[in-house]
Figure 1 (tube, rainbow, N blue to C red):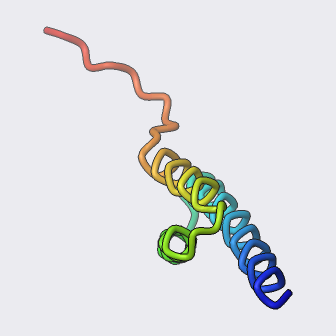
Figure 2: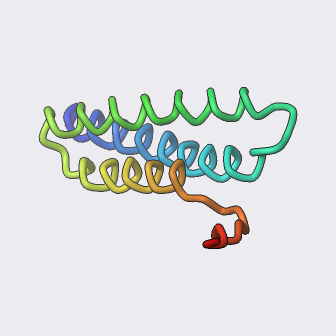
Length: 93
């Protein structure tokens, strides 16, 4: 009984961290030109570290949530490297 409560508590914490992580990607991308950009980036990297730690813990403990955490890591990496600017290609002269 205690193990079930521990697994569900771990799952709930992981779910909250993942929601914060996805939110941090959106905030960091939308606030790219804001004065608080450094704060947004720090929040993003803190969430990235938390999600990767939870993914490692989920893998080591054998819970089934490692795939969900891995998906969040991949989404964060994609969000961090995606270029949303409307830049025109360089002209060849």
